[in-house]
Length: 254
Image (cartoon, rainbow, N blue to C red):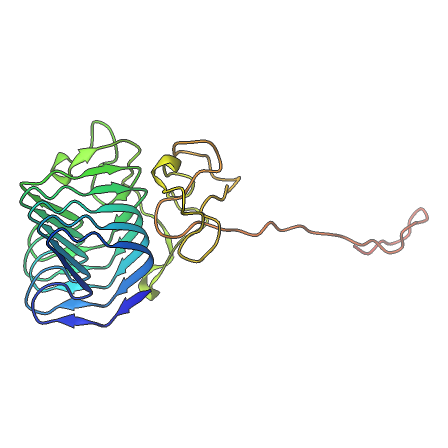
C-alpha cells in the first residue's frame, strides 16, 4: 500500500489513528503527505494508539507543526520494525521524524531515521514527557549505543548506530542500502515478527552480504536496518584461451 500526495487540513496527512486503534501496516510507503496546519505529516496517533509497522517508508512528508513523519500523543505506543524515515519535515515546531508527547513511548527496532528536519528542536526525534525504546537502529545525531548515546532521544536498547546509511539515491527517493551501508547485517533478528520473511521489495528479509561483517544480533543471516534488505548478485568471470594448446613462443589470446 502506498499513501502519496495526500493532505489533511489539520492532523495526519496520510493516516489519523485515535481512541485505542491498532492498525497493522506491513510493506507500506508514506510519501509526500502533508498536515497543512497541524501535526503528523505521514501518520498521527493519539489516545492509546498501538500501531504495528513493519517494512514501512516515510519519505518527504511534511507537518506544519510537529512530527514530520509521525506524531504520537496521549499514551500512544506504536511499534516500528524495519522502518525508514528520511527527508520528513516539521516546518515550524519539533520532531522532523517523530514527535512523542504525553507518555507516548514507541518501541523502535531495526530502523533508520536520518535526514529529517525540524523548524525548532529534534530533527530526528523529539520527546515531551515520553521515553521511547530504540534498539539496533541508525539514528542521526544519536551518538550510537553506549556512553555517547543522546538520552534525549529515549532509552538506548543496544546495537544503535549514528552513521550515514548510504542509501542508493536518497535525493531520488531510493532508500535501499548501498553496498557500503553500515545498516547491512546490523539488525536484530528476534525483533522481526515470525510472519515477516520478505522486505518492502518482496525479497528475502534475511540475506547475508559476505563482504560486510555482521554487527547485529542473532543467527546469520542477519536482518538489515530499514525497510529494504541489501541484495547483491555474485559475479563470476570466465576466460577462454586461444589456442588451447600453445607451442613455445606462440602468442596467446585471453
